[in-house]
Image (cartoon, rainbow, N blue to C red; front, side, top):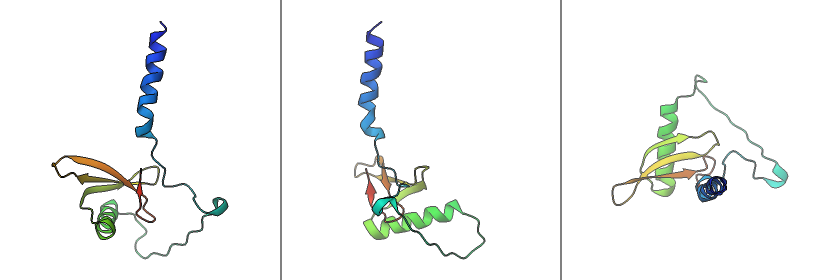
Length: 103
């Protein structure tokens, strides 16, 4: 009976590093102050396909990354699917404000 709770704790601790990625939608300014100002033109309707194209262009321009796809996650980070040299794919995470890599 005692092995089951210990095994569950060990499994949870082993999985923790993979889940400990920094969130992108938190305030990082002095004293938690974040000031933003946005100006835009258009219909006011978000187009996810257009957003993905913009994210992909910015990743290529800033980091030389050819992402297969990019999506905005619920925590505010961009998730990019990037091909490895051996042909496999990996996920990389970026902050959409400054396109720095988030681990």
